[in-house]
Image (cartoon, rainbow, N blue to C red; front, top):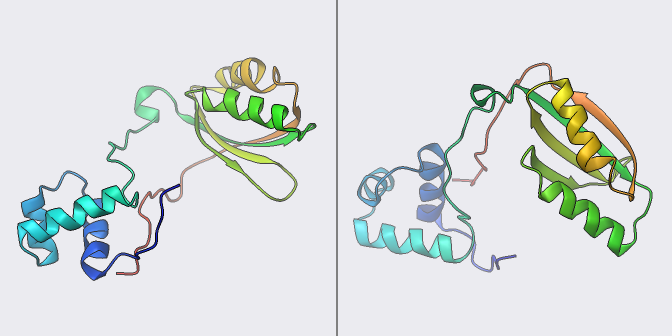
Length: 159
């Protein structure tokens, strides 16, 4: 985990806001948007990357356009919480492309997964191959999303 000793200054927060809106901005366009010249903007951008605040740059892809129209939230409870069982479960779900996010959680379930699949049969196959084959899993509760109300990957910066 990267160290976050120095919080972003106002220009760095402006960089983060601008790039979260459009990660394809050139350094020149970014510098114009935040009101700094190109060199200090580039230095701040590189510092944000080196400090791990900017983790990478990606394209947001529409899962439904690629045939993965079903989003399922899976609440997984483990029967075994020993180191090997937890590691095996995390290894299995980490290797599956259908799993977009996996969180270790508090509450009734030990993990929350966001899974994208083509249809219910695809999800059943995912369960059989990945989840039910893992001996540490005790139970799973699944919720199929009816529709997406809000989707964002933009983190508030306080700018």
